Amino acid sequence: MKKGTIIILVIVALLIFMGMGAYNGLVTSEEKVNTAWAQVENQYQRRADLIPNLVNTVKGYASHEQETLQAVVDARARATGITLDADNLTPESLAAYSQAQSQVGSALGRLLAVAENYPDLKANQNFLELQSQLEGTENRIAVERQRFNEAAQEYNTAIRRFPRNLFAGMFGFHQKPYFQAQEGAATAPVVQF
Image (tube, rainbow, N blue to C red):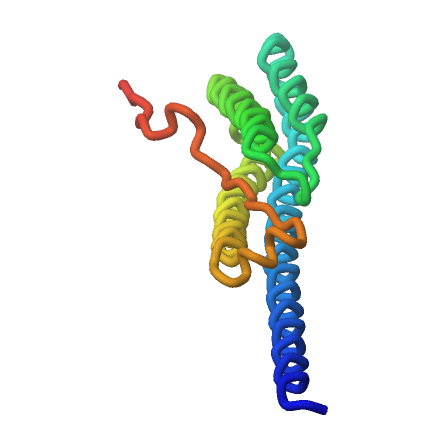
């Protein structure tokens, strides 16, 4: 074999190994994003599972608060009706999902405010436990959203860096959107006594 042929074969082999390494790295990074997304959905599902128990507990004490109770049930139904696939996340679909989940949070906030008017309900052990579980779940949601954003940032960085960006384009790897703060979230609520 000629020296030139050997050099070309070595260069081709190096390019193939570089491409394999880049591809495998991108797959690993994308799987981290998918896993992080699954954890976000897991925590939202946990919250959705707690809502019927909370509503039923409140219903026993505040049956005439039907409008508030129905708002929570409706918001939960809308939120659980939206499903996203981690492979097809777009900024628009993530915003719609986030908006639906925000509506659940708002409805739950109104429900908990209603509960303040019922001292017996506030002292009910089931209600207190559910309220504690819900608070913990909200914290978990925040943590999982942060982890998702971190995984998406790592992945987005990986597919934009040279030379992986060449392989990312060839193999169809695209940027993942981030969770964004809801509109108006930067404005602190006004508390008046």
